[in-house]
Amino acid sequence: MTAVPTSDALAPETLSPDALEQALRAHAERYHHQHPLHRRMNDGESSREEIRGWVANRFHYQANIPRKDAAILSNCPDREVRRRWVQRIADHDGTTDGGGGIESWLRLGEAVGLSREEITDERHLLPGVRFAVDAYVTFARTRPWVEAVASSLTELFAPNLMAERLAAFERHYTWIDPAGLAYFRTRIEQAPRDSEHGLEVVREHCVTPESQAAAIAALSFKCDVLWSMLDAIDQACGGN
Ligand code: AHQ
Image (cartoon, rainbow, N blue to C red; front, top):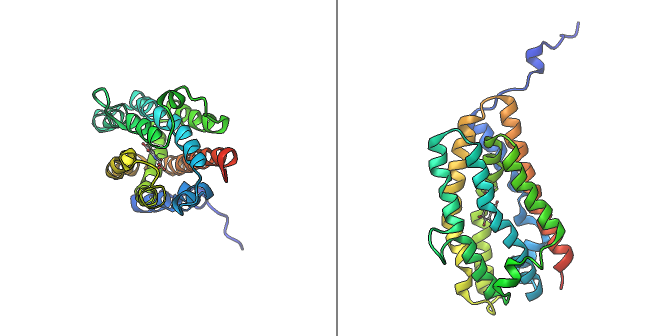
């Protein structure tokens, strides 16, 4: 007589916080450090044109991060979470003229030979990058705030990539003024702080099978956002 599965047998299990974190960290395999464009860049094989195209297009992502974070703040009812999350906006927008990550990214642009004007007027922005970034901002505006927090956890994997990138730029791309790399140096410090907070939030709030599955899906979505940005830049600038 075969046992008839009870509804419990069919009900998905709730993962422990550690098992949930393990499932989230497994997305390292799909992180964009594996993308051919980043592999080529970190191996010192990117052309000047490709690096300029990457910097100009990544500006759209950087400039939209504060809007994405403001969307999370506007949806988040938890004062303690907001008090920590709001730092991300100052990190990118700065707190005075000439400060912040977006300003540093503009200086990176100048260091690779782009004018501030051609970066900010987005004349080089590719459709695939625009759509991926805008999908990320829309996700943060329209999905439950904890899912948007989970989507930011690609930053769990960012510090290693940033350190590798920084070393590659300093070693292989000596035509770029090292002062222009300040963004990556700062980010190597900020990313672990941010991902630690994001992970804390997801471990604390995702305590049902549904919310845990949604958090994992949110991180998978964000891996696709980052990957498709590079696909567009690789297709337009790769091998130039
Ligand atoms: O420079 C990056 C940055 O400010 C952020 C914010 C964070 C988020 O909220 O999604 N993600 C992120 C990332 C930045 N740089 C990327 C890179 O490869 O330089 C990595 C990216 C991320 O891992 O999501």
